[in-house]
Image (cartoon, rainbow, N blue to C red; front, side, top):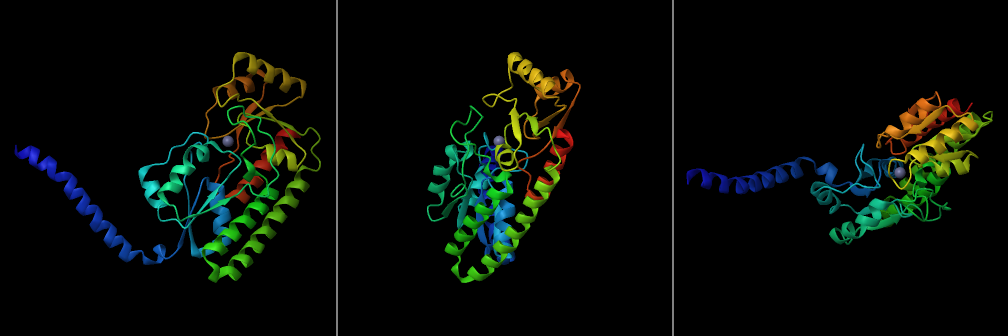
Length: 293
Ligand SMILES: [Zn+2]
């Protein structure tokens, strides 16, 4: 009996403690709560929002590091945080996480402004049969990023018009950096003759389009490829003298290793979802250039 009473009391204690902690931390972190909460779907968009919003925003991604935005489900604590956000930056273009969750997230926070990153971006067709329609990986090209950053800036001005001048200044600064990145990528790839690369998950379609590369995907319908698919890629790699299979850290593909062994090549990991977008993209392009040369 005593034990049962204790167990019954535990949830009450937890709630009281939670309330105390909340009250205490709210008091202490007043600086943070004055910031404009901006939720985004994936980590690269955090960099874009911070670049424009600076210290005025508190940007956070719904799909955390290491998770797959084609399959992720948000946690209750993330949804509580979302309820406080003033703005949501979605990728758009049919990204599965948003197709499955955005309506539910908007129901939790009906007042937040939803900014669509894909607005104004010229979309290309998806080669991933699991996500038919448009290729949703729009953020991987600096040229798309410039369009996305403009939309984010408009959104921030809408939710916080007082600081318009600062947002515009930050936006133009960051677009300047993206233009330098674009020039550097062009320069790095100028001498590359064999412009085809094999990748497990087809996340690099827009980068390929904007810099005249060809992405050859292995993954089919978001699943491990069949023996036939593997044989097809091995033949293609041999014919095109490709020695590197690119894979993403979120997906651990046994088949990438199999193909690499078959062609006497290696697997190299590149991440389309890294938080440090500009720095990461320089590294990705360097890896691609080395693989294609
Ligand atoms: Zn993807």
